[in-house]
Amino acid sequence: MAIKTSSAKNKGRKLQQWTRDRILELVPTLEPDDVKSTSMGAGGEDVQLSPAARKHIPLTFECKARKGISVYGFYDQAGDNAPKGMEPVVILKADRKKPLALVDAEFFLKKMVEK
Image 1 (tube, rainbow, N blue to C red):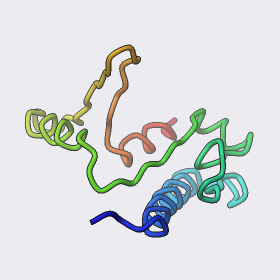
Image 2 (image 1 turned 180 degrees about the vertical axis):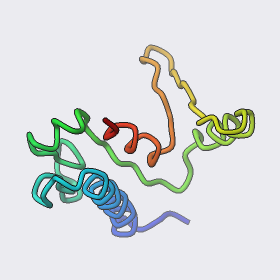
Image 3 (image 1 turned 135 degrees about the horizontal axis):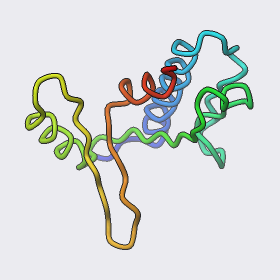
Image 4 (image 1 turned 90 degrees about the vertical axis):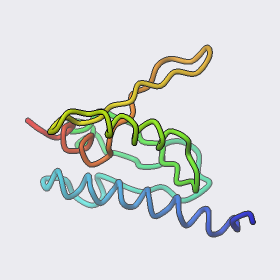
């Protein structure tokens, strides 16, 4: 059974808000207006960063919350094969696309704000 459009948008909105909240927690010098979750269906970035926020996190965020994303199997395998204490990373590449790195979001955000 397919998920309702409103439910799908709510899942995406929650992920955007989680990302916004984690950035604000990890960079306590930022103000709430420095990191904003955009409205669903709006074009551009899902989480907008002010110039002050970009000094700490020079990234752009696209948030996707879906029931099934096949990359989780790859990530689980990387975790199963990782030596104790090592963070799993998956390098993905589709035909005619550039390689991408998949890591745990908490790990990634914490590394981005480390000094």
